[in-house]
Amino acid sequence: MSALAQKEFDSVLEEYLALPETVKAELIDGEIYMMASPSRRHQEVLGTLFSAIFNHIKSNKGSCKVYPAPFSVKLEKDKDNYLEPDISVICDESKLTDAGCEGAPDWIVEIASPSDLRHDYIRKLNLYEEAGVREYWIVNPMEETVVVYLMEQEGLQLKHYTFTETVPSGIFEDFQVNFGELLGAE
Image (tube, rainbow, N blue to C red; front, top):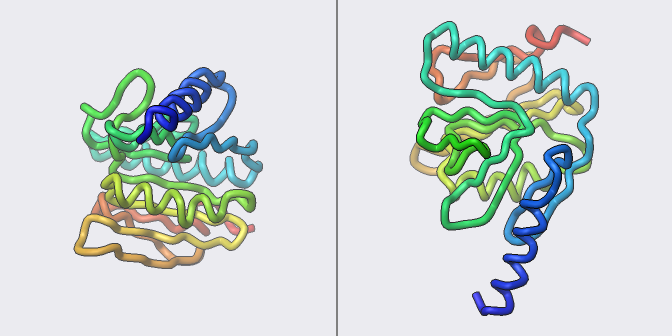
């Protein structure tokens, strides 16, 4: 990176780090992406799924930690990409800092919104895969679908589910979600 490009990037990084905690934004490849306030349905899915994961870890006396947004994830130490996944599961506590997580979480869940579909399905997928995230779910409440990317086997495994199906977790053998039951039939 040229000195001028580095100076511009440092300026963007400084601007991002100075944002108030109440502002939801992500820094990806030197560009700040402001995030819209989530819908009520988004928050219902987030809260219910977070609770299910949290309760599973707690009841099994697991060592992993689960965090809902807002929670800052700096995917790789040598790159300045800061993301705010809707749900982050981290099983290596050495990655946790007072500011959030430094390094790839084991499992990330994004709850899709109409304004950020390309962001979740393409840009973040590539970043998460490159950083070493083991499992990535995109939950789409509008379509009532879940796309699961398992990234620790040979190559990327992709699985599609609907809210009427049971979605198994790849990192927790004994955890699965039936969104229809979890969220109640609407």
